[in-house]
Amino acid sequence: MSNQKSEPALPAGQLARADFPRFGLSRFATRFPTETQNVSLHIHGNLKSAVFLTEELTELERVEQISDFHCVTTWSKTGLHWSGYRFADFFNVFVASRVSRDKAVSHAVFHCQDGYRVSFLLEDLMRDNVLLADSLNQKNLGIDHGAPMRLVAPAHYGYKNAKHINGIEFLTDLGNYRPASLNFMEHPRARVALEERGKYIPGWILRYLYRPLIASAVKESRQALKEHLEMTPK
Ligand SMILES: Nc1nc2c(c(=O)[nH]1)N[C@H]1C(S)=C(S)[C@@H](COP(=O)(O)O)O[C@H]1N2
Ligand SMILES: [Mo]
Image (cartoon, rainbow, N blue to C red):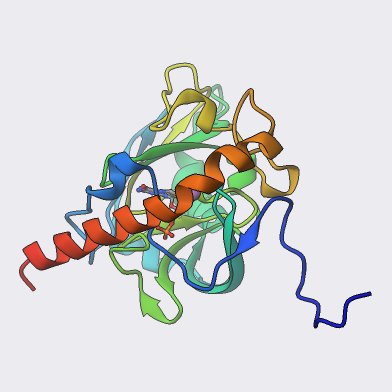
């Protein structure tokens, strides 16, 4: 028995970090959103009609959520306070009526201002703790964490939590979809509890491949943001 005060256990293979770094693939470290204030979402795909949503989103009930964030490279940040709209509410109000009866929409692809994209199973998105968030720790989302709007899906690894979202594509299958990362890096579900870090390679092996990359990725991402902010007029 240890005398140390016990913290709630993190999911398998995860280690807590004190800070919450801007993070991502090297390719995206130097890419930034051009619109950080106003939300504009292009809703498209296998739907009866496409639409751009902006102000309408504010009609949805605002929800607050405190949740942990788990990056696939094994770092976790606990106790983040997000605010935004439930994805399920967004879907029911703005998307459901555009789905045609004969085309069962089963997946969504999030498109981001920095060129990032990531896929999701629709059933995973419809859970209560999946948010389209515009605020973190009582402040509007910054350019570091996904301004103007990001996905928060705490049961899924960080790479599924798309930042700077400007489009959501609803699809009947992922036949033509290509991930932004290497193919093995994007698991279709990426559930943290099942350690679905990637495809083909077991999650516990990926821990050891990814962990050594964290420090340099954090540094690169921080440096790129600093340079971007110095170049951008206030
Ligand atoms: N648009 C976009 N979304 C993204 C990424 C990115 O590079 N671009 N990186 C993903 C990865 S790998 C992680 S761990 C989280 C990091 O979120 P943070 O930068 O707010 O910490 O964002 C995810 N969403
Ligand atoms: Mo990540």
